[in-house]
Amino acid sequence: MNNLLEQQNQLETNIFKMDRGQDVALKTNDLHVWYGQNEAIKGVSLEFEKNKIASLIGPSGCGKSTYLRALNRMNDEISGTKVTGEIMYQGIDVNADNIDVYEMRKNIGMVFQRPNPFSKSIYENITFALKRHGMKDKNELDEIVETSLKQAALWDQVKDNLHKSALALSGGQQQRLCIARAIAMKPDILLLDEPASALDPISTSKVEDTLLSLKEHYTIVIVTHNMQQAARISDYTAFFYMGNVIEYDETRKVFTRPKIQSTEDYVSGHFG
Image (tube, rainbow, N blue to C red; front, side):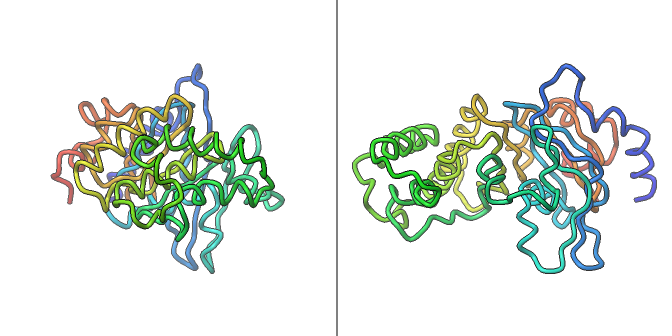
């Protein structure tokens, strides 16, 4: 492990930063996350390019989901958690104490591992948060529902059943509804924590197609255990291990010409 981190440290200036010409949508500087005395994230600095998909990969317990949740302060909900370092979005450190977390999450939305639609209609799933934020115009709400469902590739399947329970949808449809619900708030950044892990291959393919089409409008960061999925859909890939980022580069380079042997071992299935 020490040798692996020494290799990573030697490459740090190359793998943590993008080319200076790139438009960075979100970045972390020296981000640490503690659960009590356990340091789960150990000073991670990453940049995410606008309108690209970045995959976070690594073995179970390596910190990738903890890091993802930190990006929109979801770890705040966990008792005993401490987060230090910067999370920079549009020149603002959203990890600062004076940030309105709920307002911030309008811009940095999240979709979780298992589909979690509200026990409401399809229409109400998408409009619930909008109404809570004061939107009342029915025509405007109708337009956002249609647009969001179209972007999530679900509109044609549900347009005649918008007032039926979301719980009647299949698992894959429920997950795409959750994506539609997140993008209804018109975020700039969409975070997804293993969004296809509970889905069958056909539903997984539809979710992947949805994400590929969404990157035209959003910056996407996704945690996945599926190496083929990371290779198929992401522009950049970060390899996490024991709370550190070992390598971060363009996905094609990570999967075909990694700089570190441990990265090659992991993506080829020979890690450990």
